[in-house]
Length: 111
Image 1 (cartoon, rainbow, N blue to C red):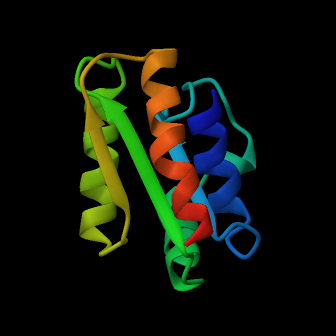
Image 2: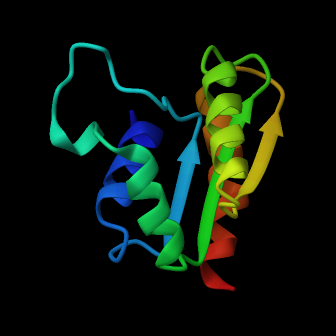
């Protein structure tokens, strides 16, 4: 649940995180979850965007069961003119993809 947590923690603390990496992220919380941290995501994303983060990075495999949700999330970000980097790989929700994403993402932290 790393991508899911990274998405929501960074959205709830927009002035804390300048770099966000979402590796195969779940985007929507389960329906039975009622915590405030998951409410008003659009407003929180706008605050995050307004804070001018340095990097918002998303990676997902074409066969990942979360692919459609991430595509919908990217469409939301595009509609907000939210800048992000996107990597689409082969494969699914696997460690091999996450290792590759980490290899791509980490050097961007030190530019």
